[in-house]
Length: 518
Image (cartoon, rainbow, N blue to C red; front, side, top):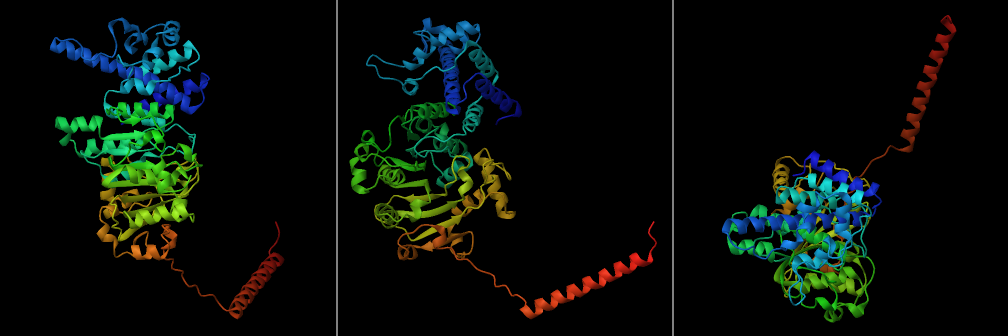
């Protein structure tokens, strides 16, 4: 957990970049990522050296060779600023090392090196590099949780939107969706638009918190570190940031693919994931010539959000589950592709929930209204009723400042405490504990009215409404009848008030005439 001192040190690092002339938030994060990566590599090398020394054996798969000592964090952190700066910039220096890291005789890269290909050193002066390295050295990241929290705090400082409608999904929304999906040790969790890997990290955290004993088994531990999480991201900056996020949470990013999820190059993603968690890109259209042909044949559209939903259905195993953030247009859009996709979710698979979120959730990035769709791939239907929930509060103000309005949660254990509290003392500042609690007990939702905050809708009603999935289509609003006085009564009341006013005015006038003026 982050302490006030840790937050202060991280804030100093951020401010140092800005005052040193590096002001683009993504550039700042990327440069810090490289430095944290180098620090992490040195930690791994030290662990390998200690193990080899204890066993009196050669170092297994060393990261650094004996003649590369000066490229290690433990060496260059103590060098003078100019020497360190040149170590980063010179041929065969630090950045050349991480760009070629892990190449074997065939030229293939390790998971480490693959994501650092194309890394660019953009710290302009020896003084700035010296300040940042010194500050990072003072950030104590003793365990996996602290490392991950430090990096998540840095990511939270990104206040600009990405391209193609991608926005960083806030951790409390991610954790809500992960808690609803409840991944286990045998699952394969995929995010086809991974970004900074927030969904993947949270899924890993959930498994580590809820299945701690099971992870002591070697097979489960190996699956957790190398196969549990998979993702796709085409932005080279974001994939480096996402890879580092996973590594600092103790997970090898071996299944983080640097590929456009919708492209022809990703045709292998089929019937593999057991759980998909995603915040879909939903801005703009794609060139159909670069999209997987079978997706276009299945769904004739250029809309990214619709194509991604079709991709998710393709990539899920039979029986696999998904929780996906979509723009509201997916719920009620009138195009043929929109209607076709909603019909397929309802008739060919099992649509289970639609959670409507307020438009302020993604501020200051965007004010677009969104919803979470939850469904299971069956290939043979199965939708009987769909659970609708109207989220009105997420624990933060819905303006651009997004200030906390109530109790938050950093760990899934904290969320469980809020869920228990919700059962006895309802929390009005956030609906997330209530959403997760009600999702876990859908049988208890069957008797709720459509005037309530959540309710069930039969598949017959959805069919009758042309597969419209917007909550307002099914919500019932009760208008209170108000009775007003007749005009005659109101006129009488006005006359009475006027008479009272005249009486008081006469009394005041009489007082002024009789009382001496001092």
